[in-house]
Length: 71
Image 1 (cartoon, rainbow, N blue to C red):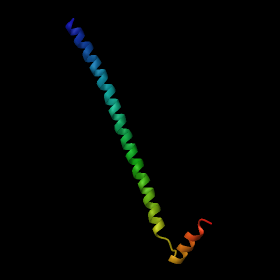
Image 2 (image 1 turned 180 degrees about the horizontal axis):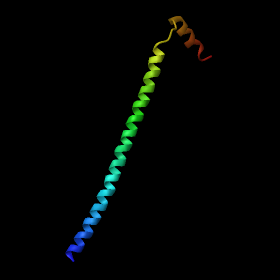
Image 3 (image 1 turned 180 degrees about the vertical axis):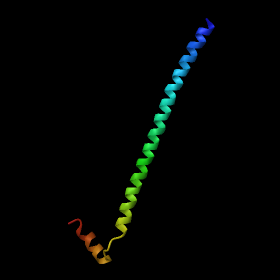
C-alpha cells in the first residue's frame, strides 16, 4: 500500500516538474526574442540618428525649414 502511494506521488511530482520545465523554457525563449527586438529597434533608431546628423544644410537653410514647416 505504502509503495503504491509513493509511486503515485513520484509520478505526480515528475509530471509537474516536466510542465514547469516547459514553462521555464518558454519564458526564457520569450525573453531572448524580446531582447533581440529591443536591439533591432535600437539599431534602427541609431541609424536614423546618424543619418540625420549628416545633413548638408547650412544654419540659414535649417532656420528657413523650421520656420516654414508648420505653414
